Length: 278
Image (tube, rainbow, N blue to C red; front, side, top):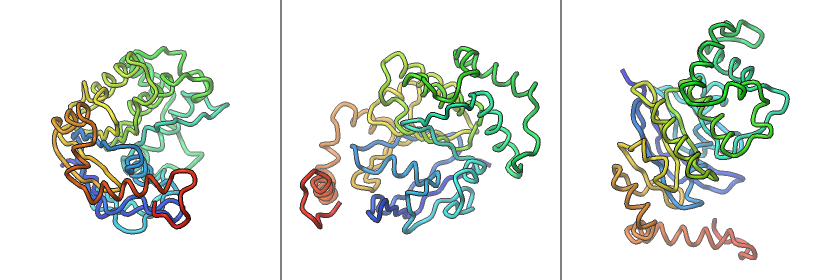
């Protein structure tokens, strides 16, 4: 039976400012979802809240996998439950080689009860699998010997995120604007790689402003966020509409929330009046 990631009435605050205002979403293994919306609508906040970033406080609501709440779990425990987040801006870890990082991460995810210092996945098995995945994705094998994201170009950092996805094989992969800052060739690589990795055992939630990542990953469901809420759901045609026409139509169909968005945007501007809502 396919696992279910369920988000119920999720309200999230950052620095005491409410960003998400009652998000509801269900994602099953094997599905592809597109999550779209203008800047500041709450897309990345939702991604970080799902993974348990300590800066993102759940004020109300629940996140669960197969009925088990994740609200109080640390990020590593959520990863062991099958969640994965590909960052928009991956961090650099000098001194830690890609292969070493992946071997520890894979060991922890596949053996959720493993304690630090206990056995890792056998080196021979790991190397064989890593080489196979890198060849499948068209990634130079020298990549594994480099320090994690240290001196990587933007495209190389995104390839690293995809390699992690390939090795960890999560139940639910959340890709936070993985196409951000990439040229057309790099976006095509990422889009094709995601398509090769997707399947019945992995759900993919693609957070994006554009259709480029959706070229090879047609979403069964598209969700549109505005001012911290999911205001519309549809299929791939909705994503196409947003790509062609932008968010004017969405705002016109939801004037009250659009007005709230405008007020919050104004409050973020330099010189905004003290006490303005954001």
